Image (cartoon, rainbow, N blue to C red):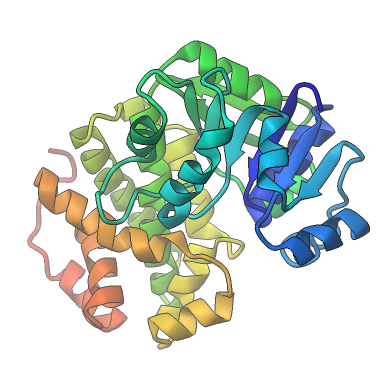
Length: 333
């Protein structure tokens, strides 16, 4: 399959990206570890569990054969949870040549090491390997439906970002480029924690005033930590920062927001996760962001209270009281 792209991860987002690539005329392989599920996708030409009704283009091939999928590819795109990123990339490494760009659409950090995913990739591949991250305000269902969407593709090398973006860009899908891979990765990770906070606020019955304030002050927190880690301010005001933050804080398609709603309604963390039955990146990222903020000496009161609700069983109402008991201060500075 000449010029093929292989997408690793057959969840909703990986499937949507595979559909997008195939719709753009690119031969696409979609790999998942469940042989029975991938065989069913090949037969029905859809992912009935995660994206029911989204038909596969003719040039999209589902497979559970990893060596076969990788030996045919000219570009790799990972769409797996952040906690599985290292293991998954390590499994693909033996089949890749250094000429194959590796991109990922994962939004998170490595939980134990606090490393950004491009740092993990540099360890497993090489610092010179062409890599990129795809992030922005995206719901998988809407991408699969062909609804207008825009993302940022970031790489330390602009030529790599442009190559990856060119595969995605077309029709109703716009792919912008950036060299700020740190900012794009952090924006995509931190916004998940803030989306849980927005869900908690709405679950408690607070109004639009609260949600707007939370998004705005959440963005300030995101920018403080992001810039402390080396990201650029303009990135956090773009698609991978503010754009993604607005999306996940305001629409119930967001798993992170729905987890927050469940917590605000009085459910425990396990109950909230069970009700969603998919990975909720912000749950694990809340702890990672907490540790990262401590390491960098950055104050993040909203993210801190989300962490305490999830990991220290603080009630959501107590978390809100703590936020409002903070001393008065200037908005900027």
